[in-house]
Length: 171
Image (cartoon, rainbow, N blue to C red; front, top):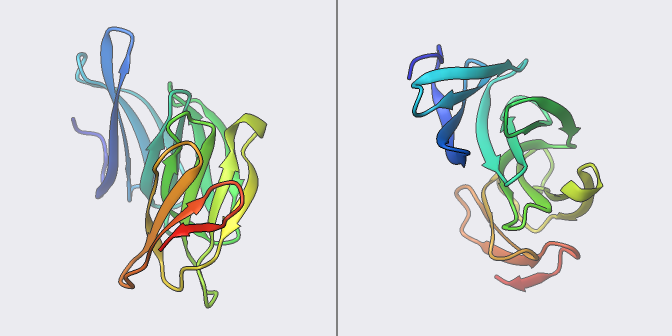
């Protein structure tokens, strides 16, 4: 598959009817949707900045980079839906297993990092923030639909926390 003109930093694969699709994001500022069986590019979106992170749910594709404070939201056909503006640069991103929550790590100029949770059922409104990290938070995931896991770049703490309250469950 050829189409990106710079480094590709993220890719995800998903089933779509009788085909598998690949979505990729790269430093050429583009998100590209591919057909695996057709071996071709289906659609692309060009952002204003480099892209480095992707997340998938049963309804959405989310993409973010490391140069602006934006999370891009698409449907699974790569139709642009909206941008979420963050107070920090969103890095690692992940959807909860049920797709109702979106978690974003961060890189910022604060003395701490902010991990935000957005509610996808309420137009991606931010519902909580977690500020215990003091380093870039690029690795994020969900244990289940209500517990988030985040860890910093080169500082060791891994936190498991309640996605609705921000309360630490385990460090």
